[in-house]
Image (cartoon, rainbow, N blue to C red; front, side, top):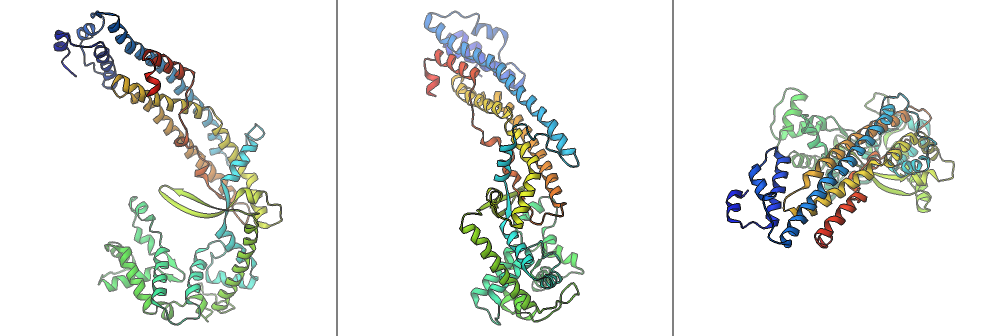
Length: 491
């Protein structure tokens, strides 16, 4: 701040400088609680000063009046903010009921939300195409073959991982006893890419050992800890038990590269011919569960592949005809995204054919309407309109900051930041309710093909809301524009 006393003595202050000094002092007090000007300085800048002519009076008054408009507008904006908070609090009563009910009932049914609620659910649910294809393949096999597959992998009926790995091995290794360099490289990539490296930062940020989790998994029938043992041997790492092995291997620098190199060398050395024959090349009956299969493994794999082609062609017929529609979707867990190829809810719901997976989906839609009505109810509440008006107040302040030559964004930023936080809490409550509703679907014995709920696409996104003016904001802009002879409208 300039030395006001010296400036006042020289008499060189313009009317604009005088009023801006006063306004800046007021803003500084709002931010820090401390005034930068003395009462005598303020008196000399304003009440104790007399303009020389009408031009100086007009110049001073246009800034004074504009600042007065902002002070009055702040009262209206604060009212808008309080109305927003009140509206959010009123919604929380409905959310609390649904969160704490054992079986949430659709209290909003028949209250004008039903049609949009159905559209909301159909837009944001569907069936995972890969899982559906997997289950149709399993269901299409004779019961004795199903039992053999479950002997190989007890979770094979509901989990796709084991057989998807074996399918990839089938595509490269079937009836082979040697591999080309390109095939070795492809297999190395397949195995290394099956490891969820995207979880690395997520897990380590929470104090967990990602490598401990990594080496607990499998690729097809190969325990990944086998690669940890081989890597330890290669790098001369000594250990006394498996836990110490995992801990020490986890500290290997550039672990992903080291692991891929090791896997490449193992495959090139005959891993799939020497130690772990894929199902497609295995003539044995033994399983890890101790219950032998009735058919040899290669016959089981052949039956699986033929049935999967059949079911893929079956689904492809509906997709090619446009009766079923595929789309790419994703789910988020914290910072991690999982991607899906999903059959859209709209195409499933309006498919007029008796198919088990279509019937299952329609049953679930009826149960999911409680969630659809809730989301629709929230999205139709006035708090989103109020938030848009608060955003416009921020736009207004950006322009006003140029006029008064000081940042005024703190006026509105506090309001919109609080509403963002409140909306995040609403979304967390919606997520809890969605999980409860989804859990109820999984407890229903008559549902075999469970719907995927893309709940993050149903939540409230204030980032997509555009600023919107209202009567008070329009009136304030009009008054300031008149004072500055159209300059405001050009900013």
